[in-house]
Image (cartoon, rainbow, N blue to C red; front, side):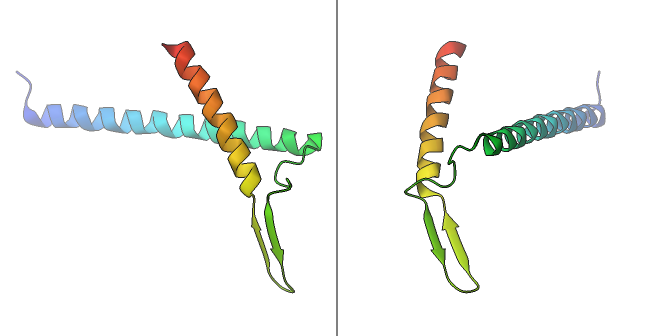
Length: 89
């Protein structure tokens, strides 16, 4: 018979193990996105400088909001995740 303290310790260990795996996966995703952004920056594509992106400049202030880039990125990611979910079924 397993005591409740042993069960609690095993549950805690599972939580820590899963949290560690999650952090490693999120780190790998961040590295992949960073590498992708560096490579996209070197291609000369106007990502972040599209015609609908909002830039407001004053003397000591610049406000930049990539509206068109955000919408385009949202559409592309939605399509990628849609196709991945269709393949995964």
